Length: 346
Ligand SMILES: NC(=O)C1=CN([C@@H]2O[C@H](COP(=O)(O)OP(=O)(O)OC[C@H]3O[C@@H](n4cnc5c(N)ncnc54)[C@H](OP(=O)(O)O)[C@@H]3O)[C@@H](O)[C@H]2O)C=CC1
Ligand SMILES: O=C(O)[C@@H]1CCC=N1
Image 1 (cartoon, protein in one colour):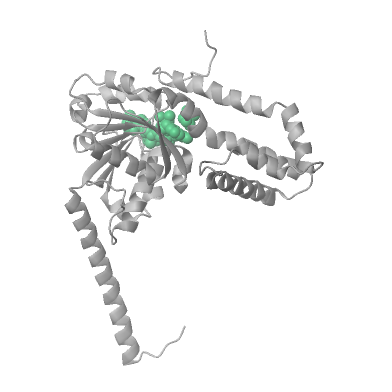
Image 2: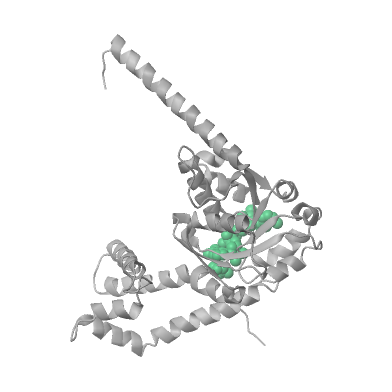
């Protein structure tokens, strides 16, 4: 676009540039002050892959967007302000930069490749995000037990109990271990994360920090550790089960001539609408019972009841429930320290 370079226009542009620089300076200062006031924590993600990136992304996003405002009301006194992301391969390191580089607070992230000791020494809080069977060797590696002493360890590993993590750590002065189970919707801040209740209970400040971390990526509930494998099957595996159902819904429509892309979009938006109805709640303020939603759609003599009867003939309810039970059993075996646990059972 052509423009007259009038003195007024040049002055305005100069002021705009100065304003932007000033705003950015003030934002940085405010962010430093918030971190300083709270005595910032260092968070290290040991195994920063799909889930580690999603969780770290939620935290960086939240910190980036609240730095100029009063901090969130649910925030702990001390927030993480430095981050270490640990991986094994250069591909893993590249992925972190590619997926998290967009966040302003990525400047506070250091990526480590094949070095877990230094970032663990520097950490106050450690998020364990490697594969379940890797945890023993990682925790027992030279220098690690000492580096982890007295730290808060938060594990998202399927099937790995707090006791089993504790047994990989020789020193008794160890470290508080908290188990949590998020899901891949963390990447869009819609995770359902189950946090295992600790025994003895966590100190207030630690509990607030753990809740704050996982509410950055979605909703949380607290349940006893004994429920964690079933929660892994429902919430952790749930996106895969739901995706299969959505794929089947769309396939039916595609078979009847609906264009493919529109069919997937319709399946996704229909699921979103249904979950919103369910979450909006019933009369008692809780989650709406799915059977109530189902009934509202099933006009007597209509097409929905016709379709539902086919699903019942196909034992969909029993099959899906059994898949969750199977995944629960397999999840519990993931903590045995080996891979390939879907194989035959004795
Ligand atoms: N995926 C899911 O839907 C869910 C997974 N979980 C749990 O989360 C954990 C991670 O799963 P997910 O994110 O999918 O797995 P990924 O394979 O995506 O991530 C694992 C990460 O660990 C890194 N890693 C491997 N070896 C080491 C090592 N020796 N030291 C440091 N880092 C290492 C890998 O690096 P590199 O890539 O370089 O090898 C990778 O970044 C699992 O325990 C799983 O049970 C929980 C809920 C849902
Ligand atoms: O299938 C798995 O092992 C992981 C844990 C929960 C979801 N995915």
